[in-house]
Length: 399
Image (tube, rainbow, N blue to C red; front, side, top):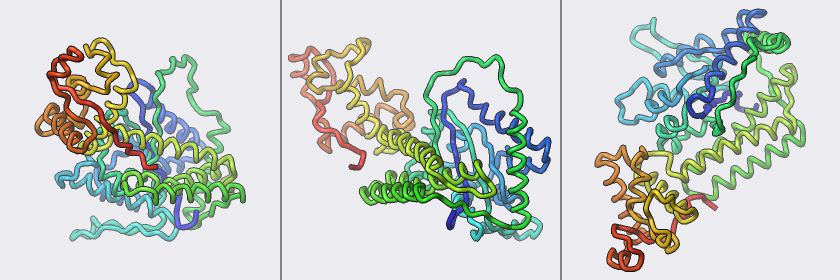
């Protein structure tokens, strides 16, 4: 597409024991079936675990067109998130991945690396088609995210696909290999791609008029979302939404007709659905305080708990009189129990209780809550302990 290739970074998020490994085995089966007819097809998929930025640069210099299938991405993301400068290889990898995402167009050049030892030099390469697909559990993935990842645009390059359903029943008759027609189709596609690579040619993806109108409408929506807030995380979330939508639409068109790919309404609708879900997932996580481990994320987490407290009766096991909730009064012990295992609080250098107290003091100072007189709480509700009256809660989602 104009001024851009079709690189995609995709992360599948699902709980343990759901079947995420099928992502790896399915790709392996498909590429193996195609390789039985056209062995060079194997070059388009790489299951390597790149340990540093230079390692990835060297890989794309040797093979400028492949998808990297990565397992347990949450583990690596935690290292990528470290910003203390102690994990230089991962810092370099983050920089290279950020760079490669934008350098997939036919005229874009990915810079090489020059060392004192010439044998270690890495040459520059043009038009790198590098994509990545990984998987992780929700806890490991979201705990590793930081606000800086949102603000510097690294995370906005990813398409997040999250499965929250139950574990499906065992398939006692699984397909051992793809249908021959499917393997042949992938082999034909890869053969065509190899021909283009050898000739250093590219194919522009066109679009129907109706598809173009839909894409333009979404582009304007993205502009409105970005211009409507100064929240940098929200702006970054929408910053590449249109680009991701165009790339997904284009890939669908290529899959349907790689000789003359044309984006139609069906492709755009499917891509829009995917990208809107991606935005919805991240916006909910941001509002819930699941992104980052600083004061702001802890406050967002408390605000979410306060809203839930006001909207839903408290289980009897908490031992909190319903009259307190009806009067918008929340005991500190409720929040202490709820935050005891939250990483944003347990990771605080002074411990989870100190982090909770610091957050509550800040919210009192801001006028969101106020501490309730203990004597009055005891006389009126029979409750003994520290409690807060909920006065006003912020709405973090931009209008």
